[in-house]
Image 1 (cartoon, rainbow, N blue to C red):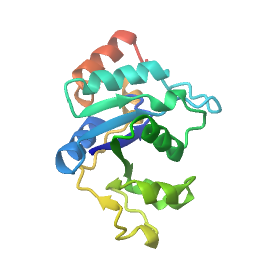
Image 2: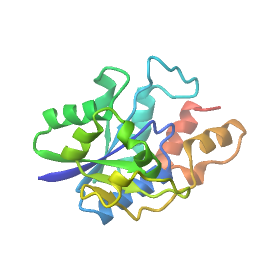
Image 3: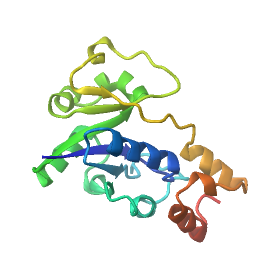
Length: 193
C-alpha cells in the first residue's frame, strides 16, 4: 500500500522551507509521496493578508510541479469549516482506500495534540511524523516513545511566511526564499504589496 504523508498549512505563501521539509520527508522516510494540504480560509476568521484558496493552491502547485513525489491537495476546500484533521483524514481514506495516510506535524503541535478533536482515533489509525523545532517544547509523557510517533531529522528552517510577507511589503528581495515559479506568480500578481 502506498504511503502518503499529509503536510498541512496555509502556505501563505509556499516557500523553500516548506519545499525542503516536504522533500526531506519523502526522501528520508518510508513515505512514497507527501501531499501538501492547503488549509482554506476560515469563514469565521477573515485574515486580510491570507490569499484566496485558489491562489495558495496555485502557489503550491507551481512550487511542487517539478517534484513528482510532492502533490498539492485541496481536499479541505470542500469540507465544512472549521476543518478538523480527523474529518480530513476520514474523507481522504474514503476517497482513497488504497492509500495509507500519515500525518506530518511540527514538534510544537505534538505538545497540544491531546487537545485535538478525536486525537486518539488519529493515533490509532495513522502514523505521525514529527519535525523538530528550534524551540524545544515539553512533549506529554503519553507521546514519548509512542510506536506510531516518529521523530524525523528534517532540517529546522528559520524561514516563515510571515517574514516573507513583511519583506515584500517593505520592498525587500524575497527571491532566494521562494521557488522560482512561485516567485514569478507572486510578482506577476503583486501579492502582499
